[in-house]
Image 1: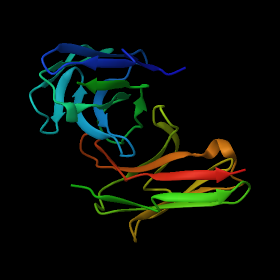
Image 2 (image 1 turned 180 degrees about the vertical axis):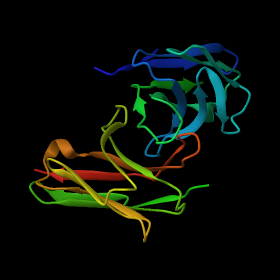
Image 3 (image 1 turned 30 degrees about the horizontal axis):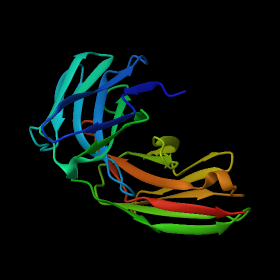
Length: 115
Length: 112
């Protein structure tokens, strides 16, 4: 069983829709991440939250809006997406972002299709 | 920023043979090097990791070696089994922000 839970598993949305992806972890980790992964490619970092504050935004378009309501939850709000945004969206957590580095624990992802 | 290169992009081996995947990194400040296995349609899972103060680490059939001087690290899988078939990603982390830089991935196929 995965310790990082993502919902929904699959999502199909039109370009005018608004939807949200959800992620939850109960490992006491204080860092949470959103990654985007295209087929046969490595995960690409989108956002990093540390102690519920946005720490890194990798120049992600504003149609992706992250939110960290508390240390266990991470959301990704989607609005006016483009077909090229179709991908697997992975949430991950780690103990902290401080040195020494700690491993990422990934959720199973949300498979997003934009029509 | 860090740049991680990974080779080969695809690798086929006979069951029971060994597989080796190599990665190089550019930032000498990187100090943590995990390896992730991703089966088709599943999440990346950590299989082994190594820190910069260690040269080699083993866990049953899997080992990782690190050469800090040359800035490269390798994954070794011995006695491969069909269930080892997956995409393997190496990564390196900067000391700043636990930011992971992934290699481009190696698709390993173990032929029964």
